[in-house]
Amino acid sequence: MSQTPAHISAARRTPGGGAPSRHLLVAVAVNRPGVLNRVTSLFRARDFNIESLTANHTDRPGLSRMAIVISGDDDAVEQASKQLYRLIDVVKVADVTNEQVIDHELSLIKIRAGEGQRAQVLSIIRAYAARVVDLSRTSLIVEASGTSTQVDDLVSALRGFGIAELVRSGPVVMSCGSGSVEDEAGRAH
Image (cartoon, rainbow, N blue to C red; front, side, top):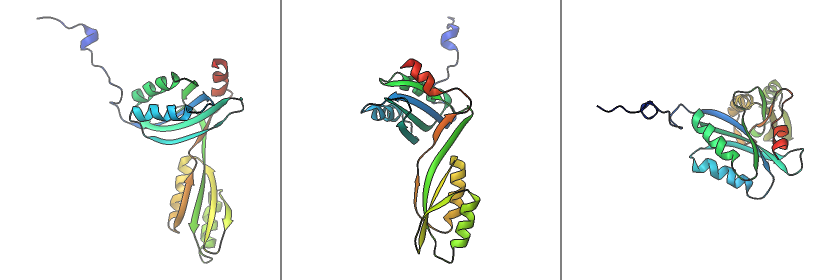
């Protein structure tokens, strides 16, 4: 009877085989046409659904920062992060899922609320530290910022009045403390 070498017979964990969880990635890239398309195409090709993606300029000329929320198993997300880092123009990728971060999003919520419901709606808005940015006879627009959970809770509290429109930015993310993803990217750039 032949023996199989241990490195071949050992159980291997395949990426994508674990339980999916929410991951928050930060990527810093050179700000050029097509970069965002290449980033999203990488995740699409690996069958990830991008739950949220925010991108904007940084304080460093020529660099943009992206906050990407995806759901997947840890191994698959790690592999995708490594492949993302190899893309042309991407200078830094960090999975900040398990780090202490400030993670806020902006939302605008248009609520159907006549004058008879205004007091209740305004009470809820104050409780969530949101503010009214537009007011008409039959509706009002609320601006709120906070964690995704805080925005979810506000939306749930207002849903009974009738939400006419809802827009959410997705999270912008910054690691707590003195470290900076952009400092690391600047050294790599």
